[in-house]
Length: 384
Image (tube, rainbow, N blue to C red):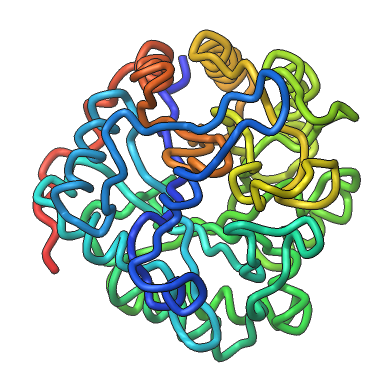
């Protein structure tokens, strides 16, 4: 019998004040303003989404302590934070640095980083004319790669509750194929990846488990994807969401979305030469990230198809199918949930005023609690 997978929820850290955001949107801005101003864009569109526990500041250790407790009590083993680092440094870091690591109970939950190495776009909100205008470049060169990974080793990978998979510190790349191209090709990228591993071991942290998004690497061409995986030395692959949408607009039911994607896990599992960690999205609705007075036509992100009817019952069924598949055929040790708190993309586990704790209860009902989340003998503190 296979072991219970590690249940990881992606965490989007934009619910605290950040200087870059203030320069773009004004003083004390957070993405809660986008959430609060969302409106229904078509008949049957369920907006706004209202958090049951209020619009908290995630950089406040007490606010984050409540999130940690909520996650641990409902079978979530780890937050995988979307991690932003550019040529001039980090972005949206106070969430993890001040909030999560400052929480008195941070040792109760594992955490890891997924480098969201994409161009930041103006989609808070994006306009009909310029739906996803680039704010600055997300390209990564060798110097930025070393600076970022050094920063992560010094401040995060050395924490006692940093997530390990197969004994290695789990670190994920959102756009690994693009990253390889920016670094100068597979050979140059492999040297930098190997150097990252060397520096982690030199710091006394042991090995790394490096992950990349399967949808970017291998969808439609597993031969090319597997070749690149071998060349750069990835250990496993994951995904951030379901990739098939069909032609429905402006809405697609969660049940139909599930049917469109029900064979994706099997396809990636059988096609990839490395373990594949599946994902179950809680929903999708990026319409809050559009100017609410603009027309809602199918254009370009964040204008696009909205998933409707994403009830806790249907989410539970998707989780159950994934759990059964992993027990029977799965090769990976993680099940990802997208996401803990993507309120303005309609993908969240946190309780809302419509369904309460329903989605969190679904996670606990399907996967139960993991008593070994904090290993025996592990130091139960998070030294700053």
